[in-house]
Amino acid sequence: MERKGATLIEILVGIAVLGIVFSGLGYASFRDFTRRQGVENSYRNLLSDLRFAQKDSSAGRKPAGCIGVLNGYSFGVSSCSSGKCSSYTISALCSGSSPVNVNQVNLSSGITLGSVSTFTFKSLLQGTSLATGQVVNLVLTDPTGAITRTITVSDTGEIK
Image (tube, rainbow, N blue to C red; front, side):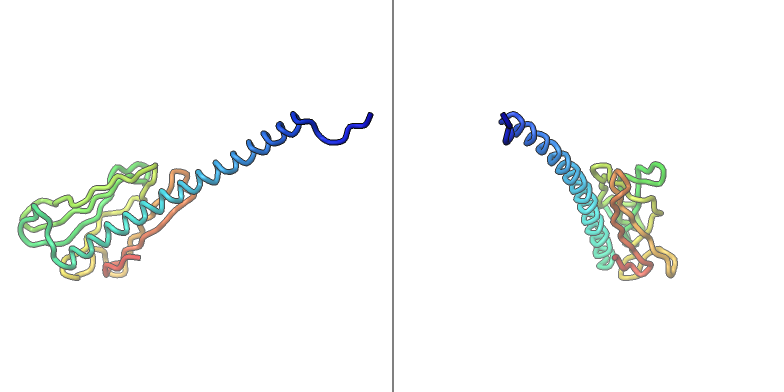
């Protein structure tokens, strides 16, 4: 007798194999999505922090603990290894006191920031401490190095 069709067990095995294949593809896509979101969230936070420092510096707004004349707000990276940093600090620079930390951020989920030298947004719309024509590229990277976002700060204080 000739057999036409599949048995219930064959159908169930086929469905199980398809389920395993699709769940593997779904996991890979989800993993890439979470990496992209991690870099994007860090990018938005860094951009917000830089604009805060720029705005407060331009307005001459001093934080508590800042004594004397406000010279500006500085940006610096820390916890660096092999040119990759896992945190940054924004500090107010005042003539009569040591730098006052305004915000210290530890980047999450293995996100790193390329090593950059410290720069300052000078007070009262005087630009930055960068040399004329110099720009700083702040590059955020995911743990695999495949996903990056860049923020550029110019000598005039423009943030892109």
